[in-house]
Amino acid sequence: MSNQPLPAVPYLKIPGDGSPYLEGQKCGSCGSTFLGERSVCSKCGARDQMSAVTLPNSGKLYSYSIVYRSFPGIEVPYISAIVDLDDGTAIKGNLINVEPDPANIAFDMPVEVVFADALGRKDADGNSYLSYFFQPKT
Amino acid sequence: MTDAYIVGVDMIKFGRFPEKTVPQIGAQAALMALDDCGLSIQHMQALYCGNLGQASGMVGQRLLQEIGQTGIPVVNVANACATGATAFREAWASVKAGLYDVVLAVGVEQMGKGLLGGAGGKTGIPKEGLMGSGTMPAVFAEAGMEHARHYGTTFEQFAKVSVKNHHHSTLNPKAMYQIETPLEEVMNAEMISYPNTKLMCSVNVDGSAAAVICSEKKARELGLMDRAIKVRASVLASDPWQERDLVMPDVNSCTQKAAKEAYEMAGLGPDDIDLIELHDCFATAEILHYGNLGICKQEDAGRMIDEGEVALGGRIPVNVSGGLLSKGHPLGATGIANIYEVSTHLRNEAGARQVEGAKIGLTHVIGLGSACAIHVLERAS
Image: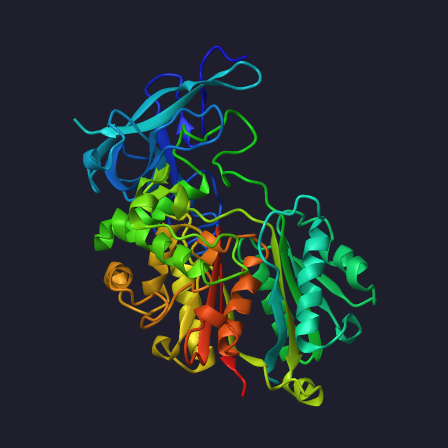
């Protein structure tokens, strides 16, 4: 079992010294960015043109749903959000620190990426995980 | 290339049949489609069988064990919710190519109850509710809210889709439900994923549908042209690259692409279409496709539902079968069930829900991930 929390997804990076961050892959040929490792660009088909980039920690809310019914053991309600980061990369996650009511949620509202424990979830070996969330930008 | 015709087509009444096997459920529709044109399994030169839940289970061969093992080639097809339409299209293509004169396409599914979908892989920790939701009601809610952000579409307008389709199903004896659901009831039903309430989610049911597809020469030889339905276009598209693909499965661009190609293949346009069966897996999904299929501008989709243009009796009726919302959505059967519905109207055999004077109809399904299948159908005589 790890003494340190593990990243909940591979594109969340936890450096030994410094703050966690999200990593994208940018195509050197067409400039598209992607979450997660890849060697071929799915937009233009270029091979071996991908390089890692640090994604910005701010963006705007693109779309969302307020989830009231989920699988057993999942706490509801929560806001499932699609966010466009400032560099154009789209990412999905929970929008937190907002009352889950459409009246409080506006398209294009500025949000920031925050990193926190993955709601207490642990894997079969007892490891803790670090995840990312969105919250309204203060 | 020859033209291809549907000469026999039928579906079972959708429901829940836990006592039956998947091949048994599929065999029912297969026999009904054969009876619809008076042919037997001995006439069939190939079987294209669509099923998702037992994709590795050789459902087509097991289906032949129920209705006649003639040794014909069987192709088992899985393509998410476009599974049935893809099986139909493979059958159509084999006739168009001149490989066979008469073939059978079957779509069948046996479903459990409850939520479909869910985010995250098998390693680490569950991602559902941690990084948004991968449940189908939420994914299609997010797609609907994208429409809302661009065009101002409202919760009430999405809900009206469900009112309309549930109303239509009261006229369809083969629908799972025949129950009116007034607007207040739809909007006040249990919220599943805003803006989709429980009555705005399609029904998980068991079901099957089947079609016999025939070359023009063979259909004439067999004397089956009277009730034959010409397949004017058959198009399958995957989702072309979009910037939010990795986090937001795209049902729009593949529909737009498939629609454009289908109208070109058929040599007609959206104004020529008399009725549409489209993929209303959630109420939020239906509204997206009015614009995607070109029956209105994207920004007019809400008005289409407000003004009844897509209701039975309106300018272009959509989902007069009751749609997936009320007829039910047995994933692998849905694509052929939609083809059955449109064919029935083109044959002027749809009874109380008949779209008067229907000559040309369009069917559309989406398999999330994504696949879009569109067929344009026309009465032959």
